[in-house]
Image 1 (cartoon, rainbow, N blue to C red):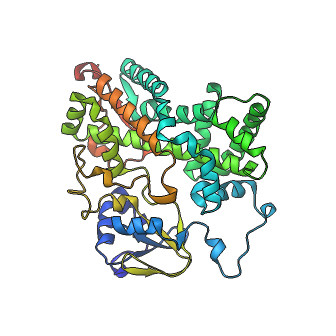
Image 2: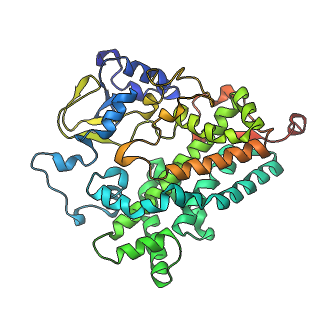
Image 3: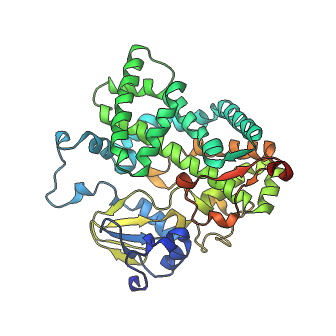
Length: 404
């Protein structure tokens, strides 16, 4: 079946503009589809809902493939650069037992109860953002509405002073870009966290950095590279994915007038907007790299040992076997909670409760206080919309005033 696909079709510009047709074909192909990624590596795509769930839980599919190579050995810490060491200690790159240990150190700060305590603080921030948007009249959905919420929330959780948060955001953008600036940003970010940790050792506060420093000082529970990797993941994953969720929710509402009208009439539908945006166009297309530790039978086919496995959340969340009219954005759909936009199993998104809360509050405030929000460009111009490169031009206010 793989012969029906171009060998690197997933990265073709036409497919990147709308990959869902590709994933529809993958689901109908009868097995995993082989692709060659831009680095020349073999990459097997799986897009059915049940098959992706199987892959997320499969004991022979995981991240730390080097542990399973015949005759392999774990590199000594001094053999890796600082950047490589930090990247290797990211939660999304680890399997048990290290994943279990590190996730357990921070998971208490992200329970539904812990996150709920942040609601008044987030609501106040959202109120200020929408008030400023109304005064400005012309805003960017990314920079002015979506971006400031998660970066400030994560910084508040970690304990980053407000005066340093612009640097926090710049590091996040550089790290997630995959550009040549990423490694330098990782080093600068690590050096900053060293300084912040030193301040918290001298004067502990009620924040995550103080908690992590206390754990680090207990000895083998958390080392310096793990501390930096944990906070970097919270910054990048918590920031970038939630920005994506908020701005795509705005974009989808404004390009679906009946849905937008429904939310303006009843802002309590904001929670439904969050879930349907997650299903229809969630922040993560394919889960972070996983590998087959041995030959694996899955999705009606076989993936050879040590090849990469591409579990597509976008494909799973548009599976017609699970969702009625899967390619239709519908905030009223009864089957929306079956989506797996946050993943599943041991790597289920640590910040899912927080992302839902931040996004719900923003959609509520936008519907209530910016009911005349609309696109400042033709919707056709958003084809191939690139979140961080293009922004989302918006207008606020009556149409006749917006033209003056």
